Image (cartoon, rainbow, N blue to C red; front, side, top):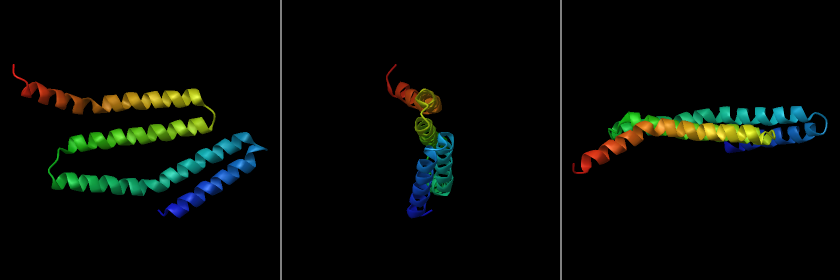
Length: 129
């Protein structure tokens, strides 16, 4: 996906939202959400490419793929939570945006438990008993 296409879609959506805001504010918000989702969907192929490259590198280096998956999952949670938060803020729903942000942070902590456990077990193994 070319950045110029994404910019074009974004500008078109913004202009449509601005034009509709005077007459139908609800439609204006919907146009913003739809435009954001279209841009996100267009980027999925790029995101998949990054995941494929990281997977190939981890295989070549014989890294533990479980940890790589956890890190990728954490990054995905952060981006998706931010995406949802910004859509809610654009719609004027700051309270919902804050709850999505909190949920994202909690999900990141939960997803990172296996890595934290591995680090703590490593530290316990290093320390003299």
